[in-house]
Each structure stands twice: as structure tokens, then as C-alpha cells.
Image (tube, rainbow, N blue to C red; front, side, top):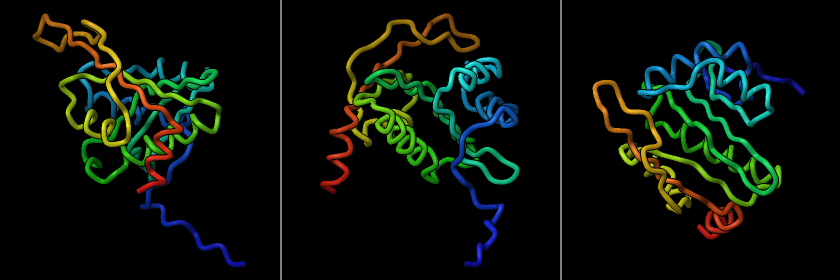
Length: 168
């Protein structure tokens, strides 16, 4: 069988590598007021967390990190490069991470999101997440502000999410 070479301009979903971290951190820096550091990503890779990227040969378009322990998973970060937004990379990354969590035995996923992050909240709600709590003054204040922002705690039952998708 003849194996056609993959078009290097087309993004692929793959595990994050340490060699990706400069671009991953760059994407965080241009996307968030309080981005993760390279050290945090290295720690996640070393801990064996689910660390994934959508990447072309020369660019990281999106990344996501999730921890899975026992029957719970926690989405720690999900980021799409600003120029790659509105192309479903965030939705595909989230779906992949949730599938990986379920494969590893989790039946629930938790995450925190800023109330001001309307795009992320819309994505999470549309994929079956519901608000289960709130952490007061969770996020550091943005430059020039003294107010810390709360975090909405969202949760999703993985078995019910998969059942909902199969009914559609």
C-alpha cells in the first residue's frame, strides 16, 4: 500500500513535546493576562498530564492540558492562537481531552473559567458543562486593576456528555 505524505501545512493533533513549549508559552502570552510559564508546562509534561497540541510543521495553533486521577479529570488550560480562532480547534481539543479522560477512567471533568471569558464559557456550556460553584477572587487582577476576578467552576459528566452526543 502506498502511503501518501501528509501535507505539512495541515494541522495534526499530537502530544505536546518539550520542544513545543516556546510556542505554547507565546500563545499563552498573547491570549491571557496571566499566562502560564514554561516551567508550569514542563511540570505538567513531567507529571504525565494529558498535554496535547494542534500543530502544523512550524506553528502551534492550539494546546490543552488536563490532569486525570481516579474518576475525575481537571481541564487546566485550553488555548487557541488568536489567528486560529473560530476554526473549531478549541472544540476539537476539548472533545479529544474529554475522550482521553474517559479512556483513562474519569467520569467527571472540572474546570475554572473567568466570567468575562464569554467565548470559553459558550464552548463549555455547548459541550455539556454546567456551573457547580464559584471561587471568589481566584484569578489575579489584570494590570491596572486592583480587583481579582472570580472563577466559575464548571463540571461535566463524561458519560452523559457522550450519551447526549449519540442522541444528536
